[in-house]
Amino acid sequence: MLNFILSAAILAVYVVVAFLLFPFYFFSRGKKLGGLFLRSSSRILMKICRVTCDVEGLENINPEETYFVAANHQSIADIPIICAVLPLNMRILAKKELFKIPIFGQALLLYDFVAVDRKNRRSAVKTLKQVEKKMRFCSFLVFPEGTRTKDGRVGQFKSGALFLTESGCRILPVAIIGIDKIMKTGSLAIHSGHVKIKIFPPTAIMENEDRHELALRLQQQISAYVESENH
Image (tube, rainbow, N blue to C red; front, side):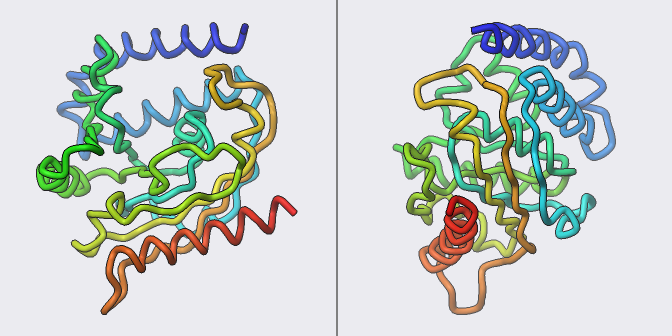
């Protein structure tokens, strides 16, 4: 309960600070202040909740490049932990419901997060154009499973989540293990614990490969690592 209260308090403080810093963000070169703000707040949250992390594959990241970061999804805590670890100017493709939360949703929009409407295919074109434009200066985190796992295993990757890959963007596959132990299903409290992150070499959609085949390739790569570490 204490961790939940602390996490909620930190979130509230950072939303207020985000609004205060927005003029500096808007005029900052490459809008890197947004990534720095997200990364620092995520690291503070991890320290307060006493979450430690082993990271493998940081050498596969060029901080000056932008990527479509594709990761498996175990809980909502995936987001701050991945953002804390990856040295990228990163934003998130988030479900549209989050943008409806008063004040918090407006902060997301101001800092170039992009809403995804899973039930409206017509909005996909609009979303594609938004992300393509913003990827000139930032990377985007996406969870191709579309929903959180209930047993720690990697679920089926949906090709729709990889819509941007056909434009030739670089994909950064990321496997995360142990999040389901520090944040239980149905709970918003982050408990102390240890997680592992594996960052694979960047890839892209191959010649004669469609999005369905790409989704399967990424799923198999991440799933193989998760299963090997869990046994």
